[in-house]
Every structure is written in structure tokens, then in C-alpha cells.
Image (tube, rainbow, N blue to C red; front, side, top):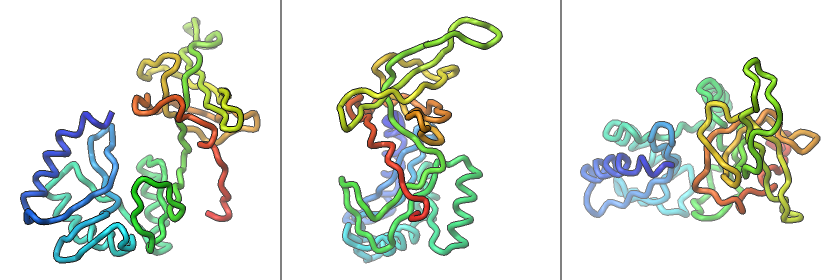
Length: 233
């Protein structure tokens, strides 16, 4: 879980605090990477840096300008804090997508430059575009079927389901290999990536990413698989 990195991140934030005045307001929004412990910043909901007042109602474009003005200082003082790259022109967007794909990133976010910051709500002015889709699923069975490998024995598989929002019952979504993955048991929630949902309702080429100790089984439902229009995107 990300909490293992909290102490290091807190130490970095305290370093930042030493270079600003005591009455400085600096609210940062980002995400901690479990693998590296790096904190990736993507928004600045509030600040009064350099006498520029930013509030949650300030348009994203203006919030971003203030954040970028202090990017060099932040990243120099705090090696585990990074500012997420942004692109606005068509050429910049194409370059950014190429870089994300080359680095094995999951995708990009499309946001309206004029949008406010709205904490705690699912906004309609931002769109997550993943190159590989992910979902949180419930482990409902283990080691089903005989192995076709040279060593014989049983497969190290986890089969998983989600709750159908229409009926409230579990619906099976497929299975994935657990070879080389952390141990899980029936009832655990895991995050899997996949290419798409097949005609049979099963995930195509699912692969386990991690165990989700921060997710409840009741949060894993079929709403995760809503289609979107490529033409609109």
C-alpha cells in the first residue's frame, strides 16, 4: 500500500515548507506510485505563492501556470515529487502520448482548461483515456483446471467476478495466471488489466496488477465496464 511511503513524502513536504513563509498556502493534489514512492503532482487546488491567489474555482489553465512556475524548485528540493507533464497543442499531445506509450504508461487524462477543482465528486469535464483498461475484481476461485505445461500439476490461476449492478449477483469475468504474483485467497480484491470485454462477457487477456487491500468487494461492480465512443474521444 502507498502508506509505506508516507514518511518519506512528509519529509520532502517539510523541506518545501522551509523555503516558503509561514503564512504560505500550498495545497497539492497528486498520486503516490506504490512501486517507487514518487508523488506525481497534477493539480494545485489552492495557493498564494508569489502573491498569486489560487482557489478551487480558479480555472485549471491558471492553476497549472502557477504550478509550473514552481516546478523546478519543487523537483530540485524534493527528488520524490514530480509534476505530471501536460500538453495543449496537437503536436505536443502526439509527442506526450508517444512518450507515455514508450514508458509503458497506462494512459492519459483529457481535461478542459477552464474547469474548476471539485474535490470528492466524479466530474464530467475530465476523461481518463487508458491504453490498457483496468478493473477491480473479486477472487472467487483458485487453481481451476489441469495444467498443459511440461511440469504437469494444476494451474496457478485466480478466477474472478464482479457484482452485476442490475441484479446484485456475482457475474464471472474470467481468470488470470497467478504465477509470480503475490498470494491471494478467495474473497480478496485484485486489480487486473485487460484489452477489452469479449462477446462472452469475459475479459480478454487479463493480467493481475496488484492486490487491492484498500478496496471492498462490494465496490467491484459491472459499472467499471461502460463503453465509450472512440468517435467522441
